[in-house]
Length: 209
Image (tube, rainbow, N blue to C red; front, side, top):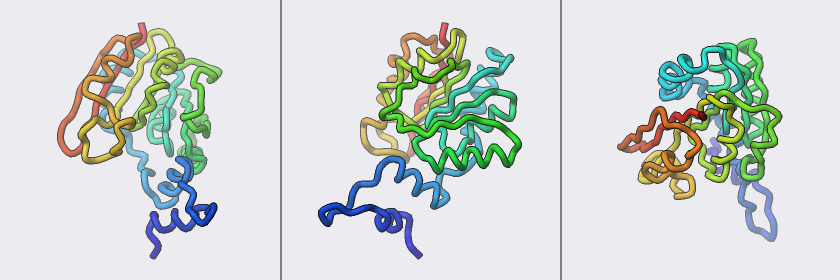
């Protein structure tokens, strides 16, 4: 039996007898091929934020952007309730699985395969009533997230904090304490919470006035 790490290593291309480092797309494709990160169960914080903020403040439904949405667990949650969902992810396998998951449920979502390291969110043709960001941190996108959010729209964000044992280890991929409170000055904070323990996360809900 070949482990995921071994399989990924064997599939790398070699240059000058040195293995090429896998791209982010290749890394995530390998995870999805191994069956990792394929759950369609929404994050518990999303369910709570939907109940407390989305349903009361956005009852008419509308357009939702699922940032780094993987195989579509959150896009499908909103598509089932009549929202128009757009999912962006670096993995072509991830977006293909998201479309497959939607078809199986007779739902429709839009998917965009793009490397968010080199993607301008402002080029999207529409603006959004709701934006979701879960376990993905790209700070240079924060101003654009506010720009593509419609007036009265909501941003729901959750990712790992410095000091977490579970999750990424590089500081660039980890929030500082209270960072989200400072990073979205154009939004009114409706909810903010930090959790402690093995998995340290920050949860944020903001409204564009």
